[in-house]
Length: 352
Image (cartoon, rainbow, N blue to C red; front, side):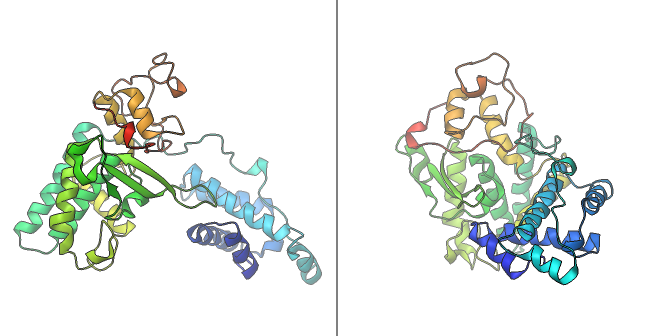
C-alpha cells in the first residue's frame, strides 16, 4: 500500500514537488520496515518506538523528526479517508482497518519558524577571507601542476563568492543561468551585473519557485562574474547549455560536488564544522550591517515582504523599523534562514 498508485496520484494533484513526494514515500517505507507490519496493523506505540530510535540511536535533528511525523500523518490521513475506500477494503479483507497513528500527544509541535541547529552561524570576516583565499589558492596550485582540474576549482571559487555576494541559498546558487543578470540604472559601475534575477527561490508548499531580484552591492562581485563568464566558463565543454555553473560532464554542477568541495575547504582550514553552505547567506546580511550599511536599506534590500530575522537587533533601537530593529552592533549570532534576500526593484539601491 505505501506509495501505491492512488497515493502517487493524490500527491501531484496538490502540486507537490516530485522530490517531496519521493521523500515522503521513502519515509513511509522506512516506518514500514521498522514496524515490520502492514499499515492496517500500525499503532501509535510503533511510531513512538520509531521516533525514540531515530532520536536516541541515530541522533536525528528535531526538524527531521517532525518532517518524518508529518509524512506518516499525511499517509495515514490518506488511507483512512472514506473517499478512497482503503479502510473499508482492509476491514473486508483482513478484519481490521488502518488508523491514524500520529496525534498531538505523540508528535512534535512546530512552534518556531526557525528550527535550525543553534550551532549554525555566519562566517566572521576573517573566516570568510581565509575561506576565499584558500579557494583561490587551490586554483593556482592545480593549474601550476598542469592539471585539468583548475577549471572546476575556479568555478567553485566563484560559485562560493557569488553565493555570499548575493545572499543565496544552495539551490538558488546552483540553478543560476548566464541570463540571470541585468543592468541597474542607478548602479552603472556594475555594468551587466547590477542585478541578479533569482528564478528558483525557495517555494511554499504547492507553489512554484519564488522569483526575486537581488541588487549588486560589492564591486568585486561584478568583476569576478565578468571574468568567469567571459574568460573561464567558455572552456567547459558543457557551457553551451546556459547554466552559470557547468560541470565537466553535465550541464550543471551537482549538489554533492558543491557540498564536498565546501566541506573539504572548511575542514582543511580547521574552521567550525557548524559552518555550512547556508552560512554564506547568513553572513551576507550580517556583514552588510557590520560594514556600516544603513539598516533601513538592508531591510528594504533583503526583505520587501518580511522582517529581517537573521541578525540580533539591539533592544530599543530604531523602533520605526519592522520588528523594532535598528542599527545592529557587530554580531555573528543569527536566527538562521528566515529572510528573503530580494529587492522591489533597481530603485531600491542606496549607496553605503
